[in-house]
Image 1 (cartoon, one colour):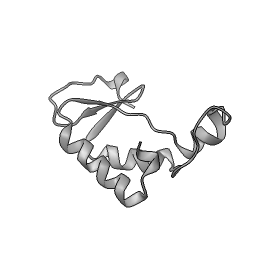
Image 2 (cartoon, one colour):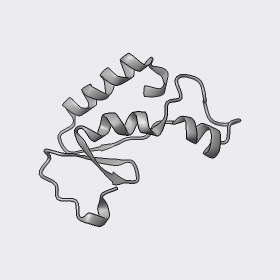
Image 3 (cartoon, one colour):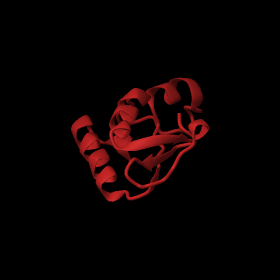
Length: 87
């Protein structure tokens, strides 16, 4: 859903996700690179605001650790991620 929101609203929504999440967040959104290089453009909805993965990672990094596979663990959740689990 975030890809359909203008930047200001999407950034606010991501702040809200961080405030609501207490443990882990499964996060997936279509990025510009995914649209250009990975998606079947006949079957995938490419409308909205296709942002870079960097845009999303920058906002997630503040409160989450990237555990791979779209899983982000809240930094203050008390969950230990071993070295090979962190990206």
